[in-house]
Length: 294
Image (tube, rainbow, N blue to C red; front, side):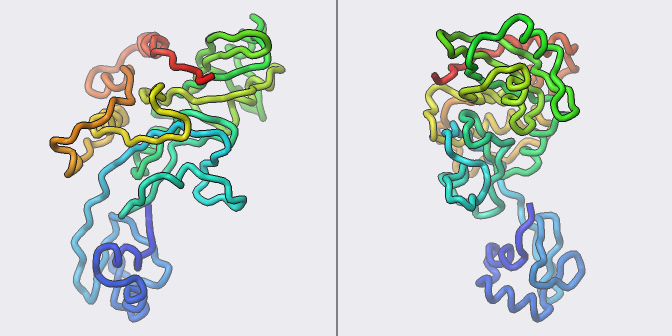
């Protein structure tokens, strides 16, 4: 995550941002041995020098994760030209870096959304090669027939790609409204709606209830967000093969909130021999089902 050079210098206490711009224009600042210009962007890995003296490297920020129960009508973009509320509006300001959403939910979808200041953690959670699955509660305009279930299991071709759920399970319902829980290994744009639309069923409500080992707890009300406790962030880092993050300076002696994590095969597999694929699938299928939030 890069930022403008003058902002970095100001944040490190070298002076006001306008003053830093003056230093850059005067050729007093270098980045990786080259004279910087207005518009130069830097990351924590870049070597910054002022008047021939190198600044000491700045420690990267402590990874933080917030879990949100997204409301309908809220968008996942950072700035919305139509003035609609965004998922970033209620998050605390960061002294360094910025918040990133882990995947997206469209304006009409609700439920679990993670936001983090760690770009590597976000990338690992979203990348298909990591093997993190996503679970959704879906309300349909009718029950699925056996033929429709078989079609979803075999896969449906959409825009030239064969797409499928790795799991589809009936939850409950009555009348015209019936709830299913579905699992995807990737999170392509509008994939859940497209898959059901391809077999002639309209999704009338869509809520993400789980993202890998992270679940949406029943106590987190719609529109609320809570920061994930340090132990959970450490477990997520281990799951993703990332080094353990440093403990928060203020965490000692402070009671942390409840965990957002459930047992998940790869949490244990990070430090143990890999499990057979059948064992991993079976363990995931036993994950506790969460309320559909009807």
